[in-house]
Length: 203
Image (cartoon, rainbow, N blue to C red; front, side):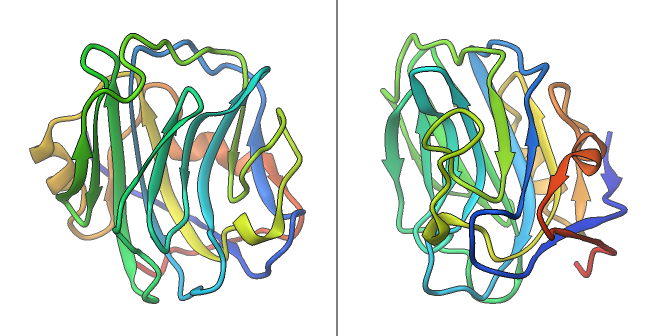
């Protein structure tokens, strides 16, 4: 099912205090999909959309650097030349599964980058800290300001399986979001830290 996000987060400043953090209820994952809407005009920083850390691996699952979007799984990085920092709203999704270590990065409903052999056989460990807007270098912290997200974000959803390309294309129309079965957008609202503002989405 699809829905329209009823609020957005506004991150208005560079720094290490503004973020959203959930420290419970992440399950172990053999596959994952993360989708979100974002808008930034920041050309200076490597802004981080999502960071999930467990003890021993602070990049267990990370989507970062809106100048050149990258995905990390189990501490291993894959990077791309895909940017999303032109001041417009963009729908961004990443999917990964551990059979072949195959991953895809979607921008505005289309596959913009993909690969295989990214942590084949890895299981993303449960029970860690999930953060929006900062990149963890330890569980729940050790943020660096150049990796802080500056802009607006809405409709973050996380699934425990890969989503079909056509579903992602559908979600990328008119600010729609799916409903994640691991975390869905309304789960994040109660976990704001710092001066993140809750606003009406402008997409």
